[in-house]
Image (cartoon, rainbow, N blue to C red):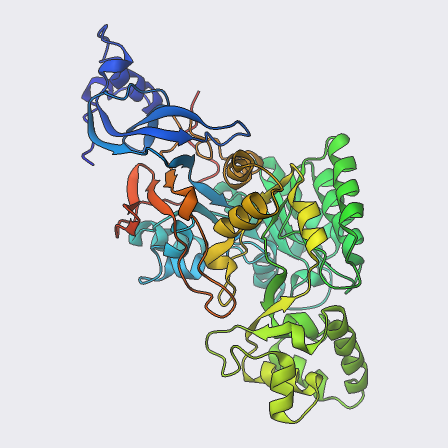
Length: 531
């Protein structure tokens, strides 16, 4: 689409410029005389809130929505007839592992997310952050992306930069260095602070350490996003981990967000009611607590993280294998690993998904049988070969559904290699939770995928179909909107997205990728918000 000539409004801001265009730079012709770059007509429009759809026409100028009630016959460079289709805000995925794809010259189209209707992804979750921040941001901006990307300051990455993988509390000087790094990343546009308190080195941090760093993010209006210390019964328990998220949010005075909320393993099945009550009570007293969730009964992690205790993983891989081989420690480590395997449901529930592993597509039980050893010995042997990703079938459907219907829960993929959630989360939610179990209507599905996420993260420039917001718009054929990825074929692209606009440019048109890279790095501190 050609760029608009804004000469009549060069001295005013973007929103004033749009107003000037819509009003003919002072003429009396009114909005009906506007010349749009794109006009989407006759669709069922879901604006991103919890309201049912309505028939309206969306006018786009440049990278912004100029009208949500444009005349169907308004002059436009291009008209899209959306009869029989749903028009929605582009989805915002609050938890992905898409950074490496976005940095890649071959994966930066982010096709797997676009084909689900996702136009913005969050990266740096689980405490990973964005290493080499300035260099990485420069690469993303120069190379281009299919979707936009917002990023977190990652506690684990920052802690490792200052302290390595040491299992200890920071000295005051080290804590000061970490505060400075969080501050710098917030000023660069980060959404807030993310932690992976289950993983190394985040698991070595005290609650007090995290609160001190979260206070820095709070000064910039940031949020706190956490892969909790425990989603099962590994350490402080599921209930204790939720209590910790609430305490951090409350004491640091910022919103707290629980990543990929679940009750992981038979020890904690049925605790969804306790968790919901905890969050509801915190929200009643003014703590802004939210969560995201994917619709699958299997989580995704690495074999090492699922079975080997955190204290064994400290310092380095070499140190970990030395501890495992130490005859004075071996029996204790085995006992802890057996308990971890039990709580996850046994060796038959752990499926290797790592694309580069020779064991891909086999369960730990099958691997053990092929090796002629027990599952614990097999797990250590596989980790020695490279620690592949796994799918861990450890969730109970009643808990999944109980979490899904809470108004503080949004959709998030936690998309990672080898798990179908990277390619199919959003259409799976639609198919299984809207059409199948009928947990909520389509408008709730849209809200928890777009506006709810924008509200939680403070992204005032996207998430809703409103005048002045970014023209991130998806047009979906709901009758044919479905996932194709499964655990056997986890990389099949979803179907049903007919058009996807990212910042006013087509990333998908007529069901196919355009090859355009219209995404941008979201600078949380410098958003151009509508009045």
